[in-house]
Length: 448
Image (cartoon, rainbow, N blue to C red; front, top):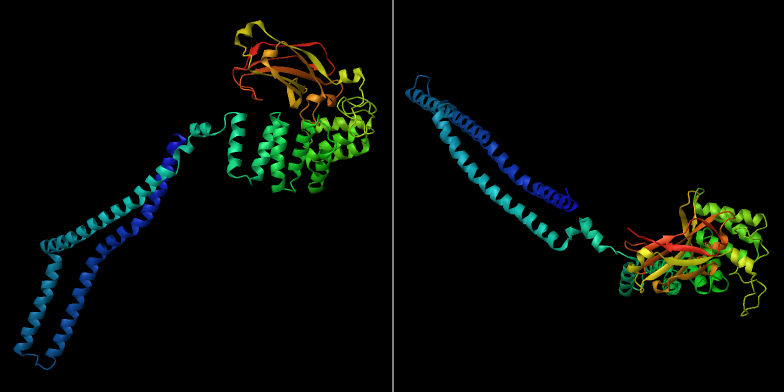
């Protein structure tokens, strides 16, 4: 049975139950009245005979025992009693009386059935019709739900914007829009959405952490200035907010405050599930800091390419970074298109080049470490993935643990969506170390 048919059955069962509950007392009352007619008739006859006997006894009290009038009155009463007894024992008389009563009961019963049927139709028909017109029974169908749900990230964003145009005071809607824009690589649009939500939820720690992340991505993954102020406020509202703890720790590392970073991240470890990949990553960062290394294995004294030294005066350019340090925190190479797919390439499509961390089984794990977006017409494309391409200060190539491997995946998307869709052209490298150069990533497959 399909879900739609099951829904119809449930509606009919409920309506039928209500109808039976209302109509049943009407039918039962008529049946009970019919059953009670015979006992009431017999009792009335006995009462009449008793009353006649009392009247007879009173009339005969003054007559002699051998008076002719006494004998005649007794004979008449005996005949009356015998007639009553004969009327209850003779089948023909009984049948006639029962038939008369049955006819009356039948008429009454038919009348009750007509009334009950009319009442049942009045209960069932309007309610079922109203449900079919306004109740959207098709919503129980999986096909209806599938058709009504957004089929892509762009549709989801468009639906959210339509919803917010109708209700601009929906703080959760603005937050959801901001997170969706942030995950699709649009920090500017995400920032606008989060800033619309902030006056509606000024003490929401997660909202302030998300806004700090969006602003940091807009300004080259830097947390100084407004982002760190928002992160401090977030922790004041919720001292165990995971994102605020992670980003505060990252900021303290960039400022060379190792002990403060360890404090934030050890608090974060008390919040994260112990067996989660994030907990394992943060544990590695804490171990590196305690051993005098930057998270990922670099010495604390050597800043990453995206970190401005704390002694740098405001507004000045970043200090030059040694080439060896920059190369050790990046993966570079060329994306090429396989010859068998040249006829399927749409030059107007979007090209994504993404670096992902690998788990112990060699499978991509966690958020992207770096993302480059270009045009398919740019193939073959020379690329460099480093911390400037990171989507979050807590997930970047410079944070990969020593000895760990990453994978670089390239994908051509006709829709420009961040998620893989059937028909996308894609390819990837094998496991490589951060710092690998001259890597060739060949697009040679079609997503099923």
